[in-house]
Length: 303
Ligand SMILES: Nc1ncnc2c1ncn2[C@@H]1O[C@H](COP(=O)(O)OP(=O)(O)O)[C@@H](O)[C@H]1O
Ligand SMILES: [Mg+2]
Image (cartoon, rainbow, N blue to C red):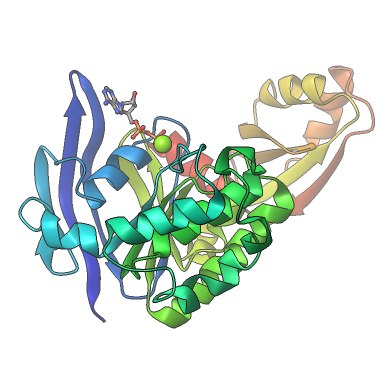
């Protein structure tokens, strides 16, 4: 399959901060490829390199067959970028924002209306409204329409769902999947682990380095140990008690429960006695399947 992005040993520093280090990956045509990582992991830096707004200090990146250092003029015409920070003009209306982006790229809204229809139709009834007065979910749809209006082959979305309500978040992913029909390759970043499952492949990124690249389901399988979920009414007390148990290898808070692994990789039932001694009442322990977040924490611990 054709490589839309081929990155090899990319490095980028800001003063003494290594924002990216030895980052290598390939992205194929029509893939939805996610970079998953916490704040400061290097996602935005990488996306600015992909969109030719920033040059790497080290390594080589080819995008749609062009070098990121020399091909930027052509590349910019064929890349749609939705930066993390709001990219719209708050004092222009919905319709004016869209027309503006179309004009900058030498096209018209009419020409590419088919491509944005699924997304733009949600906000078209409010086309006279100022962008600054839209809700988070509506701003997100307008920003996506603007990023698509020149029919790019590659769409780069930096944390498009951060700060957006849960319903809009899931609607957004439905829209992204539909874009695949138009042969658009999508690179997206998110700090939300649940969104990783919606990508074709994901790269886990931490402190400028890629920890793993795989299909989300494979990343869950990479966990490779028995995992248990522990609940008790007093969660804070529970986690401290678990961590003080000699047979415990890891204990991380996870929603309403605590996810634990044992050093021997087997359930050690003397833990009940220990929890009792530590004053933890009504503890319940069940075996569970690792999620992306568990795999991420596991990989981080190995680093
Ligand atoms: N322009 C810059 N000047 C100095 N440091 C920067 C700059 N941009 C990013 N960094 C640093 O690089 C690291 C990665 O940042 P960033 O790429 O924004 O991560 P993310 O988008 O994953 O939160 C952070 O430590 C950040 O402080
Ligand atoms: Mg960022």
